[in-house]
Amino acid sequence: MTPTHLGPAERLFGAEEVEAAIQRMAVAINSDLEPLTPHRPVLVLCVLNGAMVVTGQILPHLHFPLLLDSVQVSRYGAEIAGGALQWRMHPRENVRGAVVLLLDDILDEGVTLRALQDYCLQEGATAVHTAVMVRKQRPRSVDVLVDYVALDVPDRFVFGYGLDARGLGRNAPGIFALPEDA
Ligand code: IMP
Ligand code: MG
Image (tube, rainbow, N blue to C red; front, top):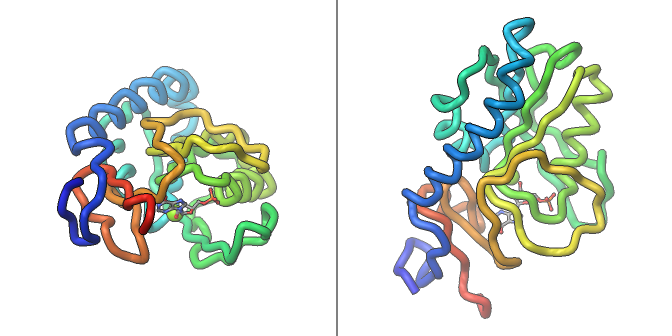
C-alpha cells in the first residue's frame, strides 16, 4: 500500500510505466493513422475530464496532422443503454467526413465509449478509432470494440493519471487501486 491523498492505495503502475505504455500505444496509432493523412487531419476527441492527462501525454507522440477537440458526457447508471448520455460539451470541430480518434481514460462497462462511437458515426464521421489508457478486466454486456489499449487493470476502482475517485486523485502520478474493502 502507498499513501495517497485518498488514503492508502495499491500502486498498480508507476508514472514511468504509464508513460511508456502510452508511448507504445502512440506507435500503434501512428502506424494505422499516418497512412490516412495528409488528405485530411485526424480529429482527436478527448473525453473530458478523465482523458485530459492521457491526451496531453500522447499528443507529442502522434506524428500525423490532427485537430484536437473535446467532448464531455456523463451517464446516470449502469442500466442506461447506449445513447442515453447527458451531454455537457459537444465537439466544436466538424465530425462529418472526419477520421475520428476517440481518447478516453478507461473502458469499464463500455457504455460511454459505445455511445460516443455511435454519435460520431451518426454525425457522419468516415471512421471512428478508439483508444483508452486503461481497460478493466471484466465481462461486458455492451458490444464495444476498442482499437488501442495502453494498460489492463483488474476489476477494481482505480484513480490517477486523470482518473478520479469521487473527484479526487486525478493528479496521482501513476495508476492506483482503492483497497478492495473501500
Ligand atoms: P463505462 O461507460 O462503464 O465504460 O464508464 C466509463 C466512465 O466511468 C469512465 O469514463 C470513467 O469516467 C468512469 N469510471 C469507470 N470506472 C472507473 C474507475 O475505476 N475509476 C475512475 N473512473 C471510472
Ligand atoms: Mg470519464
